Length: 547
Image (tube, rainbow, N blue to C red; front, side, top):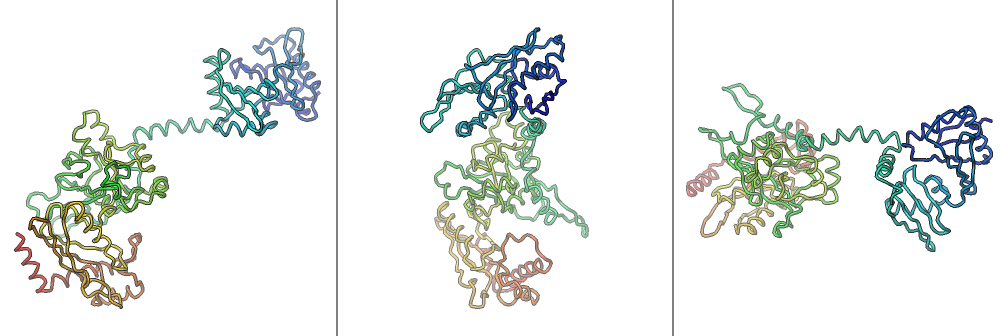
C-alpha cells in the first residue's frame, strides 16, 4: 500500500511503500540516538495501516540493516492510545502502552489550548521536541528538556518546574538547549548576524554613527574657513580648539557653551534643570560637576574633538536628552530613530585621575551601551563619558559663563524665535544668575516690545549687572526685531512671511531670499546701533570706566 497517500508522516517526512529503516536511522543519528520520533495518525488512518507500513518497511530492509533505532512510539490522536513498535530480527512487535501516553507539544496544544496559555503566562516557550505525559486525571508532566508539572485546580492550570534528576543528564540538557535554538532554519540568520553585532559592540564609536557627525560636517563647510594672503580662502575643517588665539592674534578668547545632560543626577539643585553648564575653550574643557581638563589632553583622548565638533554640539538642538526641555516620552523614540545631535565626551574627572588602562579605553570612544543609557535616561556625571548637547538646553544666550567670570561689558545678541516678545531666554538667564551666583541683571525692555503694528522702537537696550560687593558690569542686549527702517526687500519678505524675524528655528532649509533677509536685518541693526555717535560715545565711556 502507498502510505504517503494514506497520510502517514514522521515529523513531516512522508513514508512511501519502498522506504526503509534508513529514514529512522537518519532521524536517530540527527538526535544523537536519544529521541524517539512520534508518528502522527491523520484522520481516516487506522493503526492497522501504520502497522502494515512498518512491517513493509522492515521486510524491504531484508532484516539486514543494523541501526541504533529499536523502538518507535506511535500515538493515535483520536483516542490518545499509545503504541510501541519494537524492531527485532523476527519482525516488528507491537504492544499498547496504557500507562504512559505521550504527545508532542504541538498535539498537546491542538488538544488543550489552555495549556499553551498557561505556559505563555509564565513566559515559557516549548520547542517542537517537547513531550507530555498524563499522570492522573488532573495532572500532566511536560519535558522540554526541563520537566514541568501541570496541575488543574478548578478553572486554573498551574505550572511547576521539577528537578530533572538523572533522566536529563548534562548531555541531554545541552541537546535540549541547542535543539530549541535551532528549531527553524531562519534561526541561522541570527547566528550569522551575531558576530557582526559583537564586533559592533566592541569597536564602534556611537558618536560616529549618530546624526551629529553629518551635522558637524555641514556646519564646518558653511562657517569654518581661513584667509591665506589677501585673496585666498580655504576650508579650515581641522582647526583644533587648543590652537585658537595664537600669539599675535587679536581674536577674543572663545567660550563655547554646551549643556551637560544629567537626567539621572542625584544633586537636588539640578533635578529641575536636568542639566548643568559645560564649556569648551582654548585652555580648559569641563564644568563644576565634572571638573576641568586641559583641552589639549581632551583632544588626545577624543581625536574627533575640534572647533567644528564643539560648534556642532553647541548648536545641536535635536537630541533625546535636552536638559530642562527634555520630552521624556520621546527620549526612547528619538534614540531609536538616531536623532542624536548630542555627543558623548570623556569625563574630565575620570580622565584626570585615570589609570593607563582606563586612558586606553577612553581613546577607543563610547560604545553602544551609551546609546542604551541615552535611550533610558541613565545619563549622569559619574561615568567614563558624559553627554553634552546644545547650550540652549540650559541657557540660550551663552552669557552665564561670562557672568561667572564677572565680565564688565557683555554684548548679547538674542536671535531666538520669540514672536510674542516674551524674552524667555533672558528671563531664564536672570533667574539662573540670581539663584546660582547671586547676580542681578537690570534691563528696561519696553523700547524693544512690539507696538500695535508689530514694530519695535529700537532693537537694543543697555542694562546693569550687579555682581555684589559694589562690583558693577553692563549688558548690551540686542534683540532680533523690526523697526520699520529695514531695506525694501526685507520689508517685502516680511509682508509675505509675517512671523519674520521670529520664524521657527526648526526651519533648516532657507531659501535665498530668506537667508538674505536675516543677514540684511542683522547688518542693519548693527550699523544703526554703532553708527550713532551718541550711542558710540556712551559705549566708549563705559569701556573707559570699566578698565
